[in-house]
Length: 325
Length: 284
Image (cartoon, rainbow over all chains, first blue to last red; front, top):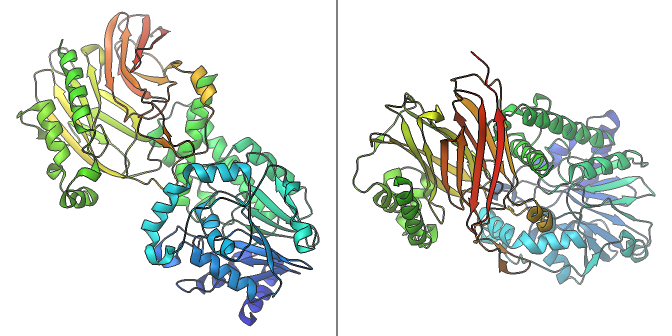
């Protein structure tokens, strides 16, 4: 708790100076190989539980994504549940190190393994899990395979107790999640339609202007377009730009300000413009990943993998559009 | 016709090998396939080799004779671009008449057989395939006088959470068999011209279970593609369900006069589609 608070102060200072990345990387280092999750207080009652970034591997126990929580007058809202049963337990312990108030609800922002599979630990404590309907459907349709792959990558020990689950609450209308009543603090669940993923949501705390962006935003990391509908995603980002946001917890990478939105917008814009030009020029798919090199984003996490795949995916989508015209 | 024999072989081999996937292979062989160290040791390859080429010698080719372009680590296991490019002279007297594409670890390893004519100008083809995790990928060129050359590459394709969000099956069905032919760059008389052929087709392998409904999507895929220029064949493709959704072929033909480029496509349900493009080459 003391250490976490110190990190938090450091992080906020650095956000103020516009270099949030530095603080977060020092926080990330402490997470390597240990079971403890770094707790970062971003605003009054708003906490980030920092992931390591990178690709899931044995060394980081697959804990690459961020989670977080908001403490209300009568209870706590948990945002995302981690990679594994053990990670879920560690997140709950981190919450416990800050507050004794009960966790009343866990909401999952999007259908990616590092945000989902800790749910068993929450459910074991009687905490209901809420997911957007389309996110729950996507999970049911593919996460059997993800879990097997993840188990093979991280090993039986790290994944013990991790199971597939059914969310307790499936919602289509964000107002269907009464998080505010449950914790005694205004909370808004934002759903933009099929944006970065079919059931991706963000959680907004209007009192502090804090946003948990889930799949909609990554920081200093290439956003993955695999599950996305690009035009709707870009539209959602414009909507986020108009909100009174003070601090943003991205799905991966350090917390930041609205600058995170601008950076992701810029990346998507550059990616789509470049790929469309390649398709028009008749470039073969085999050449597309190399030809889509974007040096401005070279330093971002997953540039060598996800960016190359993004290029191929977007190319195939535009090609399909051409075929269906 | 020679072509019919190949088709029979393709089907017989395909059926025989469907069960001989990686899971049915002895552990030592799996280890060798995983490491990508010994292409000749692949038991599946030995079976495919016997069925396609019997005991005929197959020479290992260098880049000067045959190129096989494949990513060593694929971006997307469902759409792996593969190019086979013969570099031998392509004349009426001497040319590469066939290119075989074999993917050892796939359920049906013989993925495609492409036949060329002197009017093709080049035995050069790029397409996209599905690759199950890791596999040797082989290009075998057969010259018109019966010589065989081979290139082998090892491809790793990461599966992960590989199922994308559900597509709209209604829209896909409505567009089934839609063909787009495209000729790139300046079309010059007597010069090999690049063609891109796209076919709207799900190319369902019949081996993918919808985890939501617990049903297998029935197998339905593009079996043959015949392309003619001014009535003369320039490409015949015998394809299998290793080919990715929306089959895409890039290949060459030589226009000796203005003419019509025609593609005929038939799938495993005997549905047939046709598309044409008028081409007017300019003098060099």
